Length: 206
Image 1 (tube, rainbow, N blue to C red):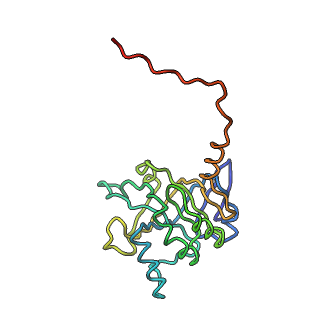
Image 2: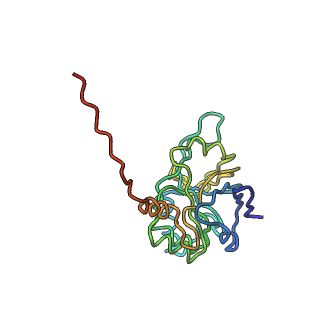
Image 3: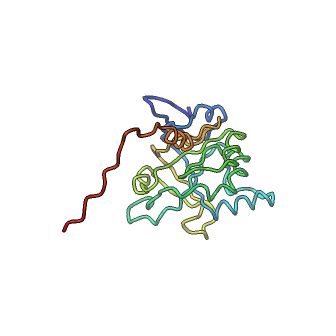
C-alpha cells in the first residue's frame, strides 16, 4: 500500500493516487520509501518550457515526488553529498503547471504562496517540509542516485533517488491546511504576558 499509518507515523511509497493524498493532513510526520526525483530552479524552468512547447517531460511525474534539492558532491564511498532542501517559494511560478501534470508530492523548506496552495487543492497534492540544515542527516536515507536529465546543469540536474525512511512533515494538504500559517496564528493568539516585567540589564562593571 502506498500509505501506511502506524504508531503516529506515516510510511509513504509512490506512486500516489488522489485517494492516497487524501489521507495526508498538515502536521503529519511522513517517511518516504522508494523513488524521489530532485529538481531546482533551472530544471523547473526547463520542464515548464517543455510543457509550453508541448514537448514531453524527461520523466513521468504522475503520482510522483519532487524534492527541491541540489546535493553537494559525494565523498569517496558515499552515494550522495549533503542533500538539504532549498527555499520552496522560488519554485512557486513553476509549481502549478507540474501539479496539473499529475505531480502529487513536493518537498522543500519554507512557506508557499496562495497560488500554489490553491493548486495543491485543485490537483489533490501535498507539500512537505524537509529538515533545513540537516542535509548530511537526510543524505543517510538516500541509497542510490542517478542523473536522468539536464546533466549540463550540474548539481541542479534532475536526479532519481532511491530512499529508505526519508523524513518530512506535511505543511500544506489538499484541504487547505497550512501548518506554518496555523503556527503563526497560534503564536499571535497567545494571551498577553500579564504582570511579566523584563529584567533590566546589569550595570557595567566598574
